[in-house]
Length: 166
Image (cartoon, rainbow, N blue to C red):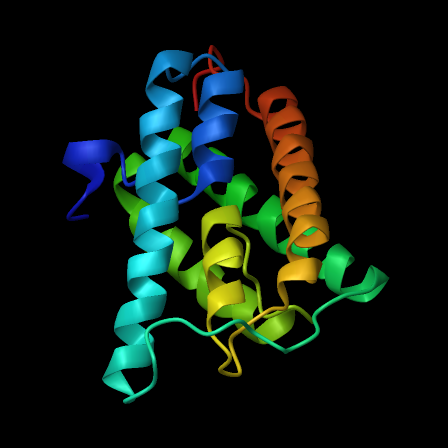
């Protein structure tokens, strides 16, 4: 609600990239958004660690890997992008609330705890708290997230086309 008028509330590279692929955002704007999202992820990690009297950054040693984790990230990201696509086309004002509710549900109901955001996934490699992920596990998570976003974009573009009155 706070950032929607400024940036469309783009905190997630999968949302930004999906919007660019679907022609809702200029590709020339994408690098700036991605940079801001990655910096935001790192600022979030530093703030959280410093609030608990930990060093701002430490490499994570927490393994998060394997087919079940990758499937969970695919599903978490698919659901997030599906929520955004479906709600924003039908009831745009409800989108922030639907996204928040979805993220909470996906955190509780996925094996990966729903990172569902490549910028956050990368940043979480630099905290050795329970929320961290080993740096070597990050690429597979991000690939699963990108695949989930692409699958949601394709399905929801077909299910609820932009030109279809909803």
